[in-house]
Length: 257
Image 1 (tube, rainbow, N blue to C red):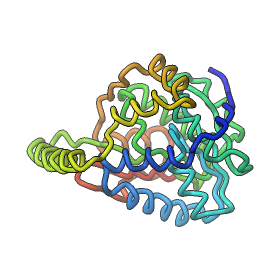
Image 2 (cartoon, rainbow, N blue to C red; image 1 turned 135 degrees about the vertical axis):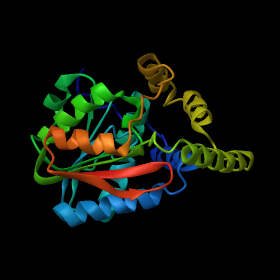
Image 3 (tube, one colour; image 1 turned 90 degrees about the horizontal axis):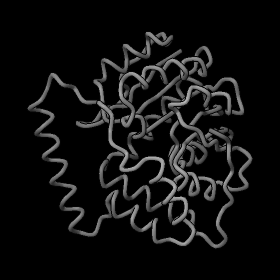
Image 4 (cartoon, rainbow, N blue to C red; image 1 turned 60 degrees about the horizontal axis):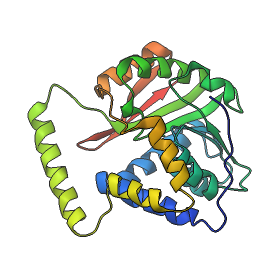
């Protein structure tokens, strides 16, 4: 595990790749922007308009992008392991002194030692931690609690399945997938298509190949319920934790230190 800064490819259209990632993610989550808006509303409500933020499992830097557009005095540290998504993030924000990227494996307990700051006003993550199973996720929440300052916040926006409502879950899933199929028929790019395009790009082909060496097909974890997340975060040291936004399939959960 090491900190790296990959150089931006000469002539690479990093903003174009950033935008294409957003469109691909919106195929799965049409209300993604509303979720980001509420996340940043709660950052401002809890810690103000100039926060120091840890963008956890940052991917292409979608949270950082929206954070800095809304709060120009914010600073952000992005952490991820995916070399292709980090290449896009680093290329997009090249030369911006407010942004630092760290390459690290969140399942390795030493990742916190690579961060440029000892504490953060807010730790934010979206559509990322569902690939962790409950046990390593609980351990990660303990580390996050140690990074959030008193009065600071952690927010996780992700798939959180309620096992007590199987018929509701099935109806929502069927309706959502039908909409996705219609969008796909109209030309929307899904996850597999997007990665196929990345593998063909001269700049991203190498990082994409490395990404598959690290993750393989990147299977999801067990995706515990909202109640499990809230209880685990309180046990980790947060004083309060509850959802602040929800769609039929996703939840934005906020924990206050």
